[in-house]
Length: 94
Ligand SMILES: [Zn+2]
Image (cartoon, rainbow, N blue to C red; front, side, top):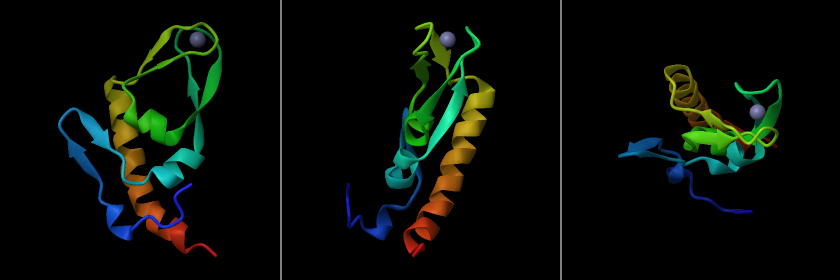
């Protein structure tokens, strides 16, 4: 854990190919279910991992889950923006 991360790290930036993840504290502790398009299963993935990844491997069928479709890209971008807004509020929680 990083107990004292400066607040100025909270600036969402997209640099070149990859996403800069400025808020990995919250993103790392949050998990979300990702449905596999190849089998009926879903897996819980850390939000930061989903936002920063272009593909996942399904733990059940070992197929690749493509996160570069326009739906996923839009979702990941929104989620990243939301985390950017939530992170400072999260830090203020008692
Ligand atoms: Zn699968």
